[in-house]
Image (cartoon, rainbow, N blue to C red):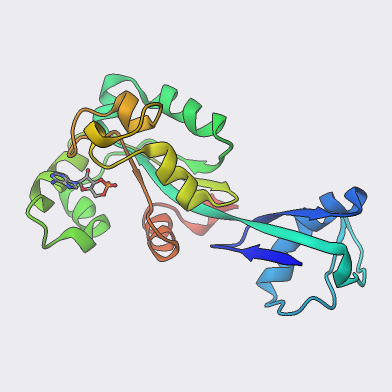
Length: 203
Ligand code: CMP
């Protein structure tokens, strides 16, 4: 039996011998993990809208992939150029679910708070000036392996080094104005989601 449970838990993918149970396990895994499930003796599974407790034999479970959430911003350069829609299309095509999204402008102080980990870097002033220079599109995205997969889809920070087909290769002009931001780890994703979105926006 192989299991992966990653990130802020909001769903799952399970590959089981009995496909009929799959949907139920996908939906209920959120509760299983949230309840601190540690073993493989019992999973609670159910059907959409009608939960039903079932004792599940661990030998039947082959894999559980729990999806995770990440945070992304379409940056001012891309919004200004009218590329936000095309970037969103790439994100959706890559299998991400958009949990929450909005278009806002932030102040320099708010950009400084968001990028506080970079405060000692020489580009901090330029970065926060740029991020507060026009509307941005922050969003919360969800899929299995969301954090790593979004980083891959975005491409290298410097668009000159980004692989063909990545968002930065297609839409970014420079390392400073690089079209999109994506969280680099679970703890930063949690901080960044909370910085821009309230709980009610994340249902
Ligand atoms: P992002 O993924 O948003 O995280 C931090 C940002 O700092 C990064 O994307 C770049 O846009 C920016 N950045 C990193 N290195 C430099 C640099 N050398 N000059 C200007 N901006 C940079």
